[in-house]
Amino acid sequence: MRRTLPRSTALAGAGLAVALAGCLYAAAGAAPDGGDGSGEAPGPGRAAVRPMSAAVVVDSGARPDAPALTGADLDGKPVGLAEFRGQVVVLNVWGSWCGPCRAEADDLERLSGQTRAQGVRFLGINTRDRDRAAAQSFVRAHGLGFPSLHDPTGELLLRFPPALLNPQTIPSTLVIDRRGRIAVSIGGAVTDEELGPLLARVAQETA
Image (cartoon, rainbow, N blue to C red; front, side):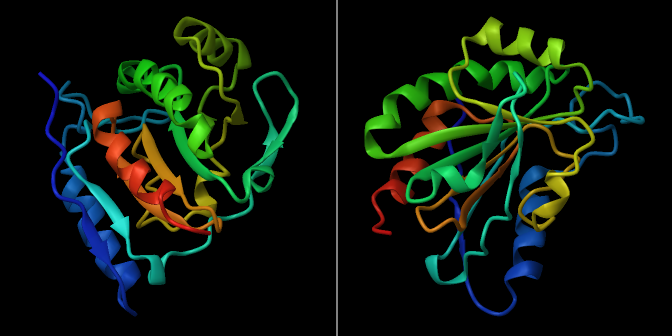
């Protein structure tokens, strides 16, 4: 059975960072066992993995700019977030070692194809895969057609406000509006049915 998307939270005002932090971590449902239900505490290089339980939707007047992201993709080719400016970008953080990432990958690829005509592009950030081969195998297995920045150390993740992107929560997904601002933050795995309405909302906005 598909999960029902909980009501998203619109946030604005000077207390954005504090409000976002409280909303995001409450939504993620931090668990002492690492959040993946295994009972095993996360060790070095092992991030907590959680199913999605809520999304944070940032009011248009309070959206922070997404940080500059440039680097090499999994094939060593240069790629950067700036080249997608003027389009809505779904930025998905994933790792080949992450079970929930495998669970959501097919939905993300399907949604990528369905929304391309609306000016939506997908970009991944592959994290904690020091060996590109493992990440490339993941891409082939799920037929992912969108590029991913290779970020084995998680350095790119640290450029984002931690209230909107917790580097310990893998997978995570951000929706970036046409002006390059963070509009939606999701911690945990997401389905196309959950992400689709949020993405449509941002895609309908004028730049």
